[in-house]
Every structure is written in C-alpha cells, then in structure tokens.
Amino acid sequence: MTQLAQKSCEPCKGDIPPLKSEKLKQFQKQIHAGWQVIQEHHLEKEFSFKDFKSALVFTNKVGEIAEHEGHHPDIYLSWGKVKLTLWTHKINGLTESDFILAAKVDAISNYRDTQK
Image 1 (tube, helix red, strand yellow):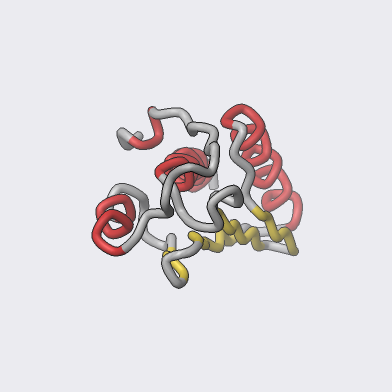
Image 2 (cartoon, rainbow, N blue to C red; image 1 turned 90 degrees about the horizontal axis):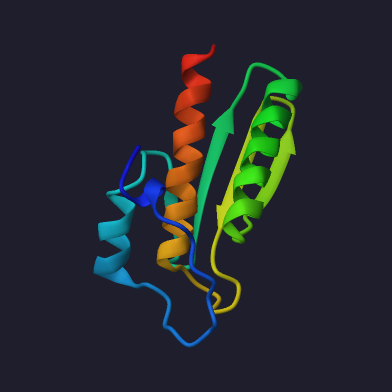
C-alpha cells in the first residue's frame, strides 16, 4: 500500500487552486500505472473483469471507499469493464484527494488481481 493510500481525503472548501504541471507529475508517480491525467483536469482509469458480476462487485467496493472518504468518482460500469473518472468538483480540477482516492482504488484492484 502506498503512502497516499494511507491518507484520508480532505474536503475541499474551494479556496485552493487545482494542481498543475510538476505537482501533478509528482502525485501521478505515486499511483499505479493506468491512471491518466487528462488535460490537467481529471484522472481516468479503466479496469477489466471476467464478467459483469465481478465488475459490479468492484464498483460496490469503490463506492464504499468513496462514501468513507467523502470523495466520489464518476463510475461507468458495463459488462467486464469499470471506468473511473476523478476530480474535485468544487475547484473543477485535481487535488491531492483525487490521488488519495486513486491509490485506495489501486489497493483494492491489487487485491482483486490476486483473487482471479
């Protein structure tokens, strides 16, 4: 588990600027491969599964983490696939909390990979 995964998401009050350039790169190095920073605005990652049920179980686990952290991704669920999109809506950009949530999702996706 990474250091980011051990942190908690902080509620954004809207009084901070979104992360840009070098700071984004520093945080991206701390999460697993596959996460893409899109236009310095949001993170995206797609996860593959053997069937719909497995994708749904993963989606529910992500939902539990999101509720616990108070930080909620956009989730696209389809047969054998889950796509997550993360950003901090309050500032319309990325914060450390987005990377924390990504790291927490990485932790459960690693667990999922060992259960195949």
